[in-house]
Amino acid sequence: TNGNAGSNSHSVTLQWKTTGNKTVTVNYYNACATTSPTSNTTTVNAAPKIITQPASPTTICEGTGIRTITVAASGSNLTYLWKKDGVAFLDSSIYSGQGTAILTITNPTSANQGNYTVDISGDCTLTPITSNPAFVTVNAASSAPTGISGTTTIQSGDSTTLSVTGGSLGTGATVEWF
Image 1 (cartoon, rainbow, N blue to C red):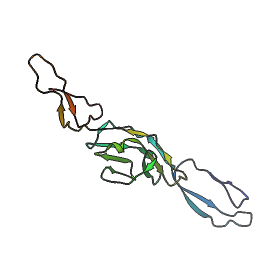
Image 2: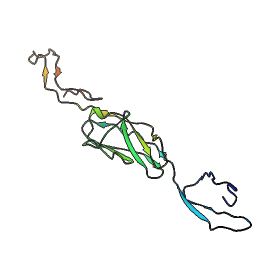
Image 3: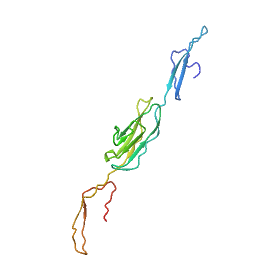
Image 4: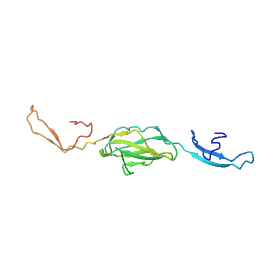
């Protein structure tokens, strides 16, 4: 503002709509004298804002692969806190990037499947802003069958039913006989 902002008042309330360093100057003036002005610089920071919400990565198989979840945000001195199903976690052999805009998930187990969000704070935040959830799907891996049961000796022209034993079918797996 220029001149007369808060004339005849010992205080003034200002609201800035842009970020950066803002200078306010005050002096006393009357017909008898003008005093030397005093200035104060106020730094106006941007509040955190999510520019790009995190997206759900492609499905990953249990114990294999790497997936990343990324958020893009603007603001001053941003901090990030990633959460799975609402609970914060630390970097580990599976998670890296806690505290950054990019979370990397390496060789996850089924326990790592869930909704991932990130809380973002900055210089102008009393309460963090929370991203939309990104869902990580971890498909269970198959384990090899341990045997085949059923009658294995029959006469020519007869039939028999054989069954697989042991092992487990992973997510979406099928049994293949050959």
